[in-house]
Figure 1 (cartoon, rainbow, N blue to C red):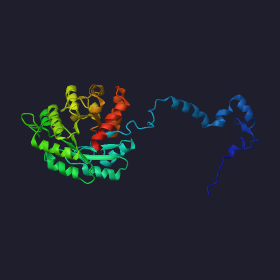
Figure 2 (tube, rainbow, N blue to C red):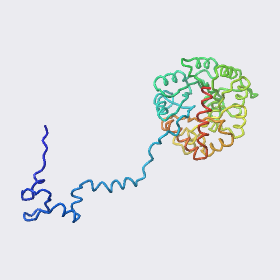
Figure 3 (cartoon, rainbow, N blue to C red):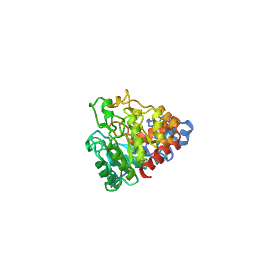
Figure 4 (cartoon, rainbow, N blue to C red):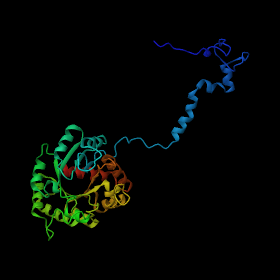
Length: 362
């Protein structure tokens, strides 16, 4: 047992004499008289002695109240109920800041309803199944990108993707970095995977993929093909009953759709994807590869929404890269910046929830 100890000077003066009750000894000379506490209060001397550190706390609180701290977390998440139809997570062949489970957990904690996992080289329908098993409270979907790793525009690969256990394989992207338009734009290779023939008509394999999409109600994303190729795919899909077609990050480098092309795509029933990543791209970007993609200003995106109509767009991030904002932060920044630029909260919900939801789950 630890015994309490009070120093002897608490009860005696400097000469070792006991203090009378209710007095405080001032000074150290043996003949200095004891002064009552009430007398010290009159002199204004006892307050700092009696209050001790408590007296010092008052100015500290005043300083803290006047400092410019960041605001607390919002009571309601600004992105609650939204969906991200385009997010990259680990494992991958490229650097990713979060694995599937971590990414889904961040979104779930912000109230996001659904995510679509995209990978340029492998299907992700099975990974969506695992996310749903390990992260309750969020709907995960997967898909397949028709790059060279899966045989290009390969109808068999699409068939096996949507058959994956759980039925969460919902999206088919036409080629991205292996697309003929992409490799020629960036001068990566003499040619890539083609979508149309010399006359601009979609190739037979493309029609086969569109047929499967129509039968299984899959979402077709155009990938990194050109605007004219995308419009050809939209027209062919409409004729074949594939009515869930999205122009992938329509404002980004490689695609670069004009407002007139966006309106034409929308008139044929296609949706246009807007992605958060564009605001961090451009010559001032922190990654070399991002410097080669044009900077998409928030004002430009808000203008497109106004010109074409919010009901023709979906919201996504295209985030997940190591060193970039987390997908959850990126989606929140995107939504808030769009609202600052004049896009209403109802329009955000229309694009990020209602339109996306009809495509994935309608």
